[in-house]
Length: 238
Image 1 (cartoon, rainbow, N blue to C red):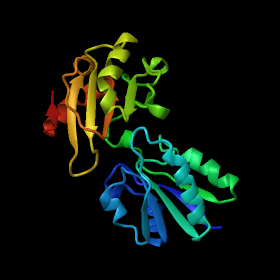
Image 2: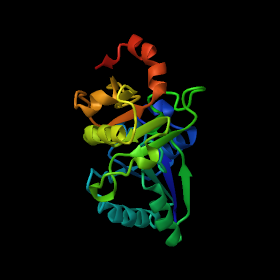
Image 3: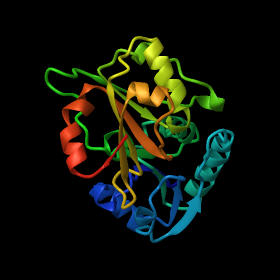
């Protein structure tokens, strides 16, 4: 049996890869990669590259990915499962680990920079934010998340929430957040096509903000603390 490595590809910039991730991409005879893995990272792989990406609503493909991992682990001594960001943050890495272990396949996780950190914002800030939460805007099967447990977290980072940004903003306002609270969207963070859009939560709720997916969405006073710096860097302001 081969060993499977669940490797975090980071948010896009190849220089954000860990040294271990870089080495494994060079050594692995096969790499199974996700939809959001940056082409510059994928270009580092020397072995066979197998696309196993999933779009929204395609959760049934996970069983197929499990079967492929098992088949390749029985064929090769080293298999890389390459995931955007960190494999254990909304990457279903835990499910893949459990599946492989049940079938006697040794597994190792190689952490990556989660996209929640890619904008470079301080998720905690003395006097402003003592904690943070990272939530998904889409649940299994396309369901809507319950935001009540996270509504008052000082810094809230939403992943996979661009398409539902208006609903999410209105729900957070209903749950008591301030419509004047600053928020920041970062499209394609750490890539040459990165774009930043600054807005208030109320503006998002009024559907006045144009953003393209994929994007990280940060909500909280920490955004306001850095707003002058954000604007000096010529990022877009609503």
